[in-house]
Structure formats: C-alpha cells, structure tokens
Amino acid sequence: MSLAISVVVPVHNEQENVLPLIEEISSALEGRIEYEILFVDDHSDDDTIGSLKSAKQKFGKLRVLSHPKNCGQSSAIRTGVLAAQAPVVVTLDGDGQNDPADIPKLLDLYEQLTGHERLGMIGGRRVKRQDSQIKMFASRLANRIRRTLLRDQAQDVGCGLKLIPREVFLRLPYFDHMHRFISALVLREGYEVRFVDVNHRPRLHGKSNYGVFDRLWVSISDLFGVMWLQSRGRIPTSIDEI
Image (tube, rainbow, N blue to C red; front, top):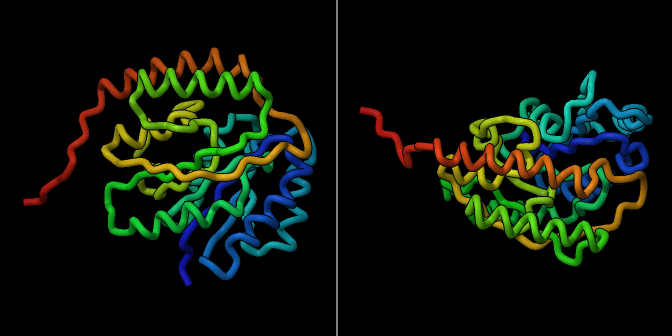
C-alpha cells in the first residue's frame, strides 16, 4: 500500500527520548494507516544519532536523516518534509512532551474534512500544560500579541503537533524559525487552519533547547518579518485554465 502519512520529528540532544517516542508513534499508528517515521537529527552533541541507528534495527518504518551542522528546528522540519514520501505530514517535537496518541485525533478531523480543498493545517492546542509558570505566561502573552498583529487564528503556536498536507508546506516561504509562524503562513497562501485539543506531558529526560528570553527576542524580529510577508501576499483564490 502507498504511504498515507509521514511523521516528521526534529531532534537535538534527545538521546533518551527518541526510542520511547518511536515506540509510541508506532503504537498509535500501526494497523490504522500506512505511515513512515522520519527523525531528523540536527547535529546533536550527545548520542542521539546512535540511539536512532539502534532503533532502525527494530523499526522498519523508521528513517533517520542527519544534519552535518546545527541548523535549527525549522530547518530540521523542512529537511523531513522534503524527504517525506507521503502526501500528508504530521510533525511533533522530539522531547516527548507531545503525545503521539493524539495523532489519530488530527487524522480523524482530516478524514472528516477530506475534499475540503482549502484545508491547510490542523494544529494541536495543548491542555493542562506541563511547563513552568513563567514559560506559560510568556506563551500566553506571545499568543495574544501574535493574534492581534498577524490575525492568524493561532491558539497555541508552541505546540509542535501539527498535520499539514505536504504540498501546502512546500508552498510556504522558508526562513529560520518559520515553524513558529506556520498558521500565519498557511493563511497567507489562502488556506484554512483548524485546531484540536491535545495532551501535554512533562519532559522526562534532557533539557529544553530554548530559553524563554531566547524565544522572545527572536520572535519579535520574526514577527515583523511575517507581517511584511502578509502585506506582500497576493494569492489568487482559484486559477482557471483556458
């Protein structure tokens, strides 16, 4: 059977998290849909790549891609999407905080909306977040500012669990940190976005690759860039061949 979805997981220094995550993804999807799993190692300093090589011996649907230097999460996601062989891509973070058991929720909504040609993304909306108070405050503030300035309908921009048709993703302009603005970029292309409630779990191993203030300063710069892209977007809603 042809592949139906490609699950893309960017990772950096997640050696203890990758094997449990692969097992959970396989458990959520095996027997339900034809799938592949693509882990993209963004030049980890630990033995993430070794853990992934070992996992390949057990999981035949696992593919492992590796960056020769650290390029960031957006680049790792893009690498995975470009290599994906299925028409639909599901992304999730590699730290184990996104629950693979929620992937079928996104798939169920996508299947309900099959034939709705303007659907461009289904995003996860985390409930009962397992983060520090300062991180959740910063996230709520960022979401409020973004919705006001970008009008992107984003209800949880930090959730890595997303379903996107591969063709839609490839239409989006690429830049570093673009994964934080996918809903705005999808809307800019004339598509619609939807959201579903998903689980959120505490990080069990390793440490976050991002600090609260690291994201803040970078996001401010990127925010104005995305606003500029929106102001320059002139996308036809349909095209007629004569």
